[in-house]
Length: 297
Image (cartoon, rainbow, N blue to C red; front, side, top):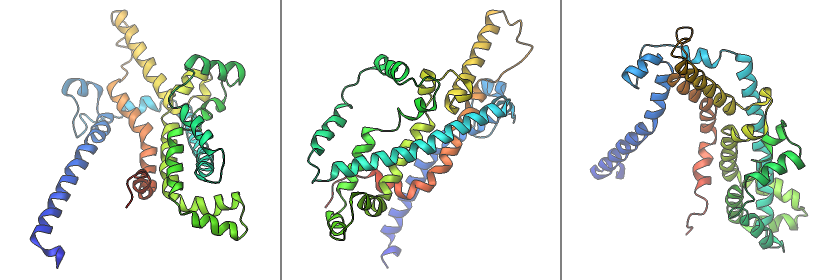
């Protein structure tokens, strides 16, 4: 009976309408990007962006995939780093969070302080670069792309906060049954921490997928470029080519016309597509995991 009341119907209608409008405004930029990626460069420059493609063209995607073996290799490098880094990062973060939330760990406050201290102060880029290149000798190494993003204190805080909310009775019962620390961690804490694992895993995966800065600092071998840095280099090369044309008075402008605006949009679609498709699989855990730290009754 309650659902058929007029006030409930009006409230639901307003809620659905408001949510639909917000969702539409959130999706509009992505629709414009997708539309522009299938438009002609001159049409975009002349008429601007639109919901539907202007003068449908695949020139931007033809430029992106001009050498499919190169971009395919960049995809493999980024996918490998994302999967490996996410799994290793979750293991390290969850293990650290589990240890720091144990009240019987005598040094947990000291270690917690050392972790949190690094969020306030850092050595800076130059000492960090010297450490990676001169002492660790990670120049042109996949480890240079993997190790810097493997652990994040913010993710540790989320993980520790969630695990602290798991009743200690589970741990005590496991100890009575003869379980060791690793058995408790793998058989009890991890299964009960699926929401936070999905949330932190998504954060780590996005960090690896969107990383281009590490490649710029440590990688000279083009075969080891990540997808983001490869596309960043591609745009810079096109911009440099157009500057050469402009400085030469347009002498080479009739030889080749390279898209710029539509290329940016196509690159955005190529880069964000896989990670956007992966998001729905973690969505059911994401909302629950991201609310960690809220006030509990």
